[in-house]
Structure formats: C-alpha cells, structure tokens
Image 1: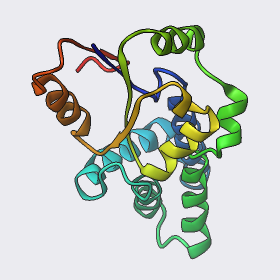
Image 2: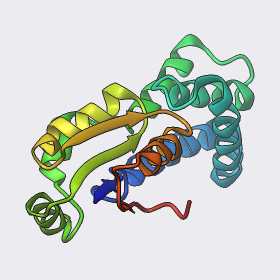
Image 3: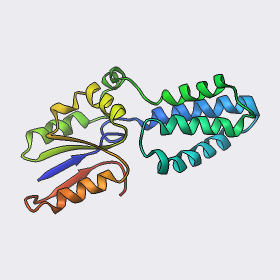
Image 4: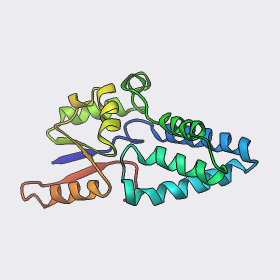
Length: 181
C-alpha cells in the first residue's frame, strides 16, 4: 500500500501566511486610495489566478501579483511603493525556523508516527516552489517520516497519483489532503 500526504494546510497551516500578506497589501493600498480593502483583495486574487498560467506555482508569482495590483490601484507608483508591495508578498514565505517553532497541526505527529510504523510506503506529495517547500520540509524534519518526497508544479499531484496507481505492483493508494479533488 502507498500513502501520499499533502503538506500545506494538511500537516501544517500555511494559508494564514498568505492571508496576512494579502490583508497587509489591501489595507496599505486602501489607505493610499480610499478603496475598500475587500475590493483590493478581490482584484489581487483575480490577478493572482491569472498569473498562474504564466508563473505556475513559482515563488515569483505572488510578489508579481502584488506589484501588478499596486500598479493598478496607484497612479504612477514609485519604485519604493512597488518594492514595498513585493516585501509584503514575501511575508508569506517563512524561514525553516518559523515552521519548526509552529510545528504540526493537532494530531499530525501521531498520524506521521503511525504511518512510519506501518508497512505502507509513505510519500510526501506537495505542490509549490521547490525553495519554499524545502523550507517547510527542513524546518519540520519531514524527511524522517517519508520514503519519498515529491515537490510538484501545477497538475503534478494528479500526475504523481496517476503514475502511482498505474504501477502494476501497487495494490492500493490512499491520499491524505485538504483539497476536494
């Protein structure tokens, strides 16, 4: 049996970091433009979704979306303002020490210990930027729990799972994650 486990918002909470960065940009731009923060957030999310096709899950997508949002809401933004927007986006990307300090979601350590002790082949299957995901992996010493660590791009999880299930030696595959798909 193979078990794949997602990382972000399954083993650890990370969406909060993106939400805090988005809120920071929306409130900062709102104070400069008198535009409701919710309108800025909505537009930022639209821009970020559009940027998925160009940047995928690379580290540059999120800051690029912040910069584009700033350019849209500020008339002729200064270089300093654009750099500030990028710095706000970077708040979502924490160093390994932060992930180590925060630790796992409740009961996750027990799950990982039980999976490690089982006869299953256990894979960490996470989508995202290699550097950003490795920070989390190093910070939490995840390599000690998994037989394999796969960091994939857009659509990569489905491909990984398809390849795993098409392997004739695989009897069963179980995926543990937070997304409906």
